[in-house]
Amino acid sequence: AMETRAKLWPALSKIATPAFAFPFVGMCFIIAMVGLYEARDKQIGDVHEGAGELWPDSRYNQDSRYIADKFALGLNVLTVIVESDNVVCVDYGKMHYLEQLSWNMRNVDGVQSVVSLPVLARKINSMWQEGNPKWQNLPRNPAALAQATSSIGSSSGIVNPDCSTAAVAIFIRDTKAKTVKHVVAELEEYIAGHPYEGINLRIGTGNVPIVAATNEIVHKSELPMLLYVYAVIMTLVIITYREWRGALCCVFPLILATIIGDWFLTAFGVGLKISTLPVLAIAVGIGVDYGIYEYNRMQRYMRMGKTPHQAYLQALYDVGSATMFTGLTLAIGVSTWAFSELKFQADMGLLLTFMFIVNMLGAVTLLPALVAVFEYIWPLKRKPLSEEEARAVMRGH
Image 1 (cartoon, rainbow, N blue to C red):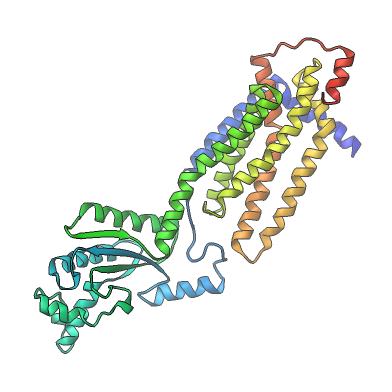
Image 2: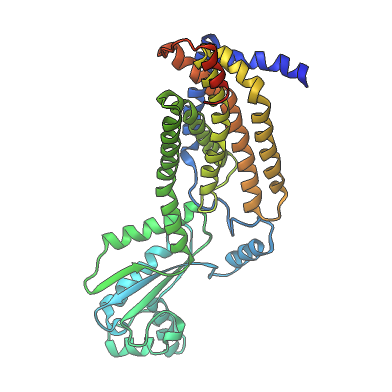
């Protein structure tokens, strides 16, 4: 092991020389740009049909697919709450408006069927006429409308007892991010473009609105959450080392790892959800430790007058093995989650394993390269230390 480190550390330490540091930093910048481009189609929400926390061949997902294929109704419903200023059941204009809404949503890609007050009223009106299909229409006469809707009680979930509030139940095939986003966008566009006096439409109940709202919050929270984490790390590093360059050297590898992590999500078909969003922050919080191990040692040796290359070589001899051992131990530990019966846990295991390794590699390659680049462009003026001061630095004082 000693012989291996004696060969590996001098070779790896060359990354902290200008000849290697500048090309490597440039290559990392290109990787970051490619990662941003590849991650542009990252899905916020579920990527696959059924419950994203379960494998596709799980009993629940198999049953949900069967129900969606064989029946008009499904397990995923978006309910629009219709608030009226009068009795909607006997108002032909409002019933016709809801019928148009139902027809429009029924023709949206991803929608299985729509159940609403006018849809049921048409069928009941036909039943009052011995099932004649010619009578499957909305009566214009209030009395006939009352007859057609009288059989629809509040227990149906479509209308309340005094018929001042109704519901339009939109059943969609799945809760994939694209499907939910498309259906909700079409519904919001129709509501905004077709107002009706005396009617207020609210996207209310069902699991689909909850999924849509959750995806929207995750999308809005991702960037601020990561920025807060980076800001805290930079602030603490600046306070500790009193050097802005150290903050950038510690944070840039984390940013690159996050970009590559988003690329990983896109490439492996894992959606960013409320359950996966914290993983990126956790990986950043653990990943910064690797960088601090290396940078703390490098700064001490550079205060003694050593070049970045010399300082990094000595830092590798001091903490290089510990840094790599810690990173690999964490990665191997969570990699066992990949064999879980829960798809969510397996995805998290793969993502954490990937992020731990990328953060560790960034700490032992990109961080020293950035130190060398900054030192070459903006060298810090350091006064030579006495022998006593040098010993104090090595003790961490």
